[in-house]
Image (cartoon, rainbow, N blue to C red; front, side, top):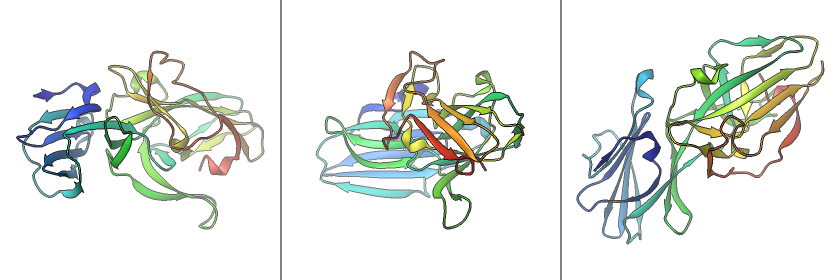
Amino acid sequence: MVQSDRDCWWGDFEIPRDGPLVWMIGPLTLSIESIEFEWILKYRYDALGDEDHDRCLVAAAGAPIEPPFETERFAGSKGRSVRIVPALADRPVVSRPEVPFRLLPGESTEMFIGTPLWFRIELPGKGIAIWELPLSRPSDTWFGPSTRVGELCYATRTKARLRERDVPIRPSRAVTQVTLSNAASDAMLLERINLPVPILSAFHKPHDNIWTNAITLERRDDGEMAELKIRPGPPASKPQAVLLCKARVEGGNRMLRTLSSLLG
């Protein structure tokens, strides 16, 4: 059996007896094989052209993964059922637009930013996550005014699209709608934005991207403070989207932060 619908890479699956269950999602190729009292996971990240990052294939009893690959083994499992759940990143994600821009004083704009999704493996009915890994391998970065003040984040590049219709459907990424508002008297430079991904939830509707809560970032005046608001539920343009996974960390819907902790 082969499934190619982009909406089918998560859910409950039965590992076949005659071979591994194989996923190919964006850069990640991963297989799960069940033998007596043991699960064997093999995975690798492939170098893809930009047009291939929307690939999504689930193949039962697929061909074994060709080396090189990494291996994880789990002992003690007697069943063949597995639940796959999308998850958001476990750290904030710093996105850098390919071309920085300035938001004029008194103006607002929307950006649509993609961040990597995680592939989480659970035991059905128990809600126990036994393993998770990113669908694309992000790099580490430090975000803050100095090496003593700041936080460890993931780094990713983004086209920072300003129109939703220009956002491609990518099964390996989640999209965050960010509204920027500049109430100051000078232009606001955006070279990097620090998205608080661990306090966001993920939502989905068929034949669309996975979306996080929408974010509003408002620079109030000429000072260094900005207000960050997180909209409960899915973005307003996705009222039919359903919850896929809750936020990793409970956080408030509104918070005041320094501009330097959000933009760089």
